[in-house]
Length: 275
Image (cartoon, rainbow, N blue to C red; front, side, top):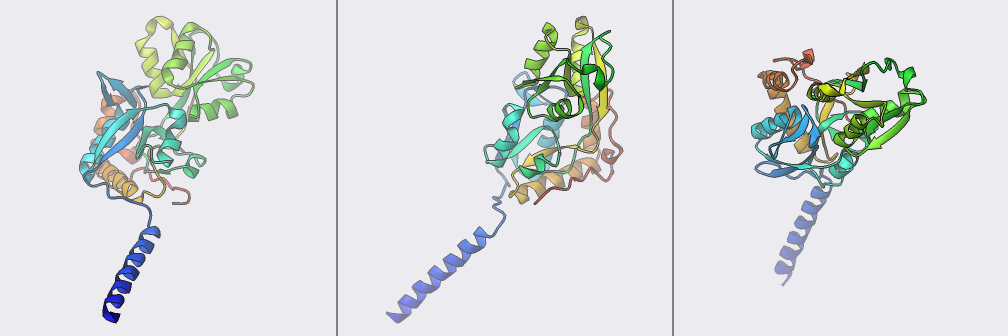
């Protein structure tokens, strides 16, 4: 009886120790062979968009390449940007792919991979509007995607502007097209696509500012360190063999590739907060 009881206690003790070790871990679950849910947008070409029923764009094609290298699959799901990071943080999505600028405020909610692009924030206006600097937008109606970096820019760096928030790019662009907005604040590459595709609207860039200090990156849950490592490893390989350069040239016809992302370059490291 004593021998049996001792064995039982030993098994229970070992099980408790295993549970304790698991509780002290990062919360990771192996991603190898898994299909991961990716929150993305449907209407922001050339970075993230839906074409003939397929999610594509620079960000999403790069993530597909990384997933193939690192042994997991991705399932893209369209969503609104305003709730994307919260959805990643609460495990609704495993990854956020949406040209997400790596601001300090956002690092409090999620962890970011290393950067895969930099860009410019631009204000699209009607040609001849004469709105060429931020001071010219005092009292003007500026459209933004809610909770985006462009929302932060319009709210904090365009004094006196009447900021109007929309759930996605298409909704804001429709208002610009209809004449109810004086300006539409977007990433430059997305703005260029609108201008090129709608020559009859007579649109132009009224103001542009570089945003290289907050490169775009993929978002993951803070405790999912295994997935973060895999994305960073796959991204480093894609930079090293020129895949990033090729994808960038495919989707961005006029925007220069940052030197850090050229074939064999050092990449764009992102320092996360509290990770």
